Amino acid sequence: MTAWSAAPGGVTISVRLTPKGGRNSIDGIETMSDGRAVLKARVSAPPFEGAANAALVALLAKSLGVPLRNVEITGGATSRIKRVHVVGEAAALAAKLEKLSAAR
Image (cartoon, rainbow, N blue to C red):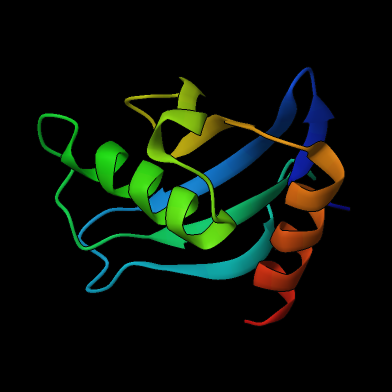
């Protein structure tokens, strides 16, 4: 089970974000109690005035090698579980996500 799926123009990722996590990193995949898979991410920014969301966007953009403008939080802006859309070639992005989640 993966935390992402192909979407028009790219991929959509389910992310569980931990703000004030001490560092910016992607920590693999976790299965939630309801069976959904999420990509675990942590950022050092606090959950204040969108700082943690901005840090998540920057982390994903850097990790996937895409410009910041290609990463957008499309759901859950004030929740720990977020839906993020990344614009780009879906197969290439999925391969990078697979590598990132397996490396942890």
